[in-house]
Image (tube, rainbow, N blue to C red; front, side, top):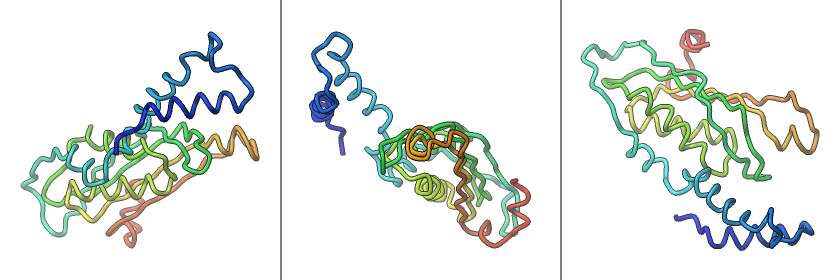
Length: 190
């Protein structure tokens, strides 16, 4: 699916009119084009399935020390991303993603974990789905069933409108494989 920039420009122009402003005034004349270009960038992840993202960032390294009882962990904490809530098109910001997995014969390049988190967030999303998407992509790339994703974020649909509670933070956990049942693993990554 390609993002239709022309339709976005037309729609933003109509929103400006609906808000009672003049889309042809100097400060707004180029706004529809700027918004269309911004949307193309911030919603880039909408162009790809989870499998396509996994294929894009499938850079792994074989590990010769692996055995079935392996409990070694890879944890990348505080990956900064942002997204947009699909309910209000509102910004989810100050978002920190932490990803943990137990290698199964190979490890993924560390920067690829951050790239996967970023691409999964670049969609109209729910925070819960971002965690699920990241976990699924990490599983596809690494072959490991044992993946945990923790996300904490502020949502402008709560901080700037509605309840207007600026201090509210939302935390989600997505647990796969042994992370669902093994409390010792969970304690090791907290």
